[in-house]
Image (tube, rainbow, N blue to C red; front, top):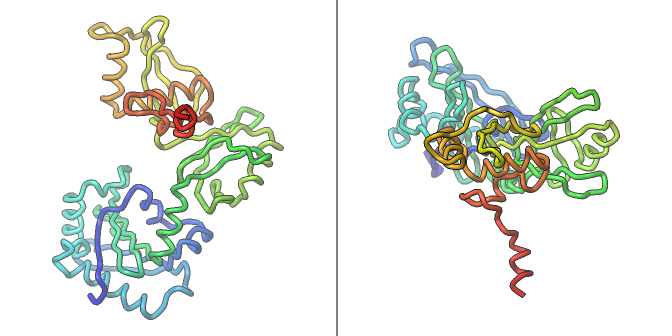
Length: 317
């Protein structure tokens, strides 16, 4: 093809942009539209359809390049035959297992970039499924938005005091005065706007509504596990801490072949839970999930709190 093109697995943050999103997000990220395709029952055909999202951005240059991109990914051996047929697509995904979304839908993601456009490929090698979704973006618009979204989504009081931040795409739990609990995903729009579920808010407007309605909001960070083990210091008993819940659940288990701390560390490690995550889970269950201490990024690999840089500078004077 005429333009230089690179192909690599998507990052976790990019995976969110390989699905249809709100019109607000698709507009400001420059999502031109998306292709949906499958290889038919034989696995050798190519049936496709196109949906516009920003038809005003679908220039003749884009249409020419998009045809080239799809044909190149189907025919050029340089790109591993990723879109040649279903068996070739499946083999390519298997060779790049780091591209897996890690969900139960058998999805894999790759990003193709040209100088002006980005193509986010969400692939499913299963027969009977749509095998290809390709979301097409103005590259500069998408990258600019994603850089800004790395700051996270702010939650504040009506007086603009920071309460907590979450990563783009993380969920919150809202507890109503009745005790009913609602969970919603949140998306970054800009410094002062967010989406909660399907609704767009100014961050101050959201804070005022929650306060007016007596709703308690906490983060459910994706950087934390759903559950982890810890120890009850007074007895050495292993306990279970559940994300978003106060307190702990006793297990009645007392490690016999190791110290309580060694037993918990080994059990958590076997479940992919780090010491930083355990420390944040303990803090959240005790002091509140919205607190600074309930975020694992604030601990080192040994689970010790990371000293704020500002404090280090103050202490060094």
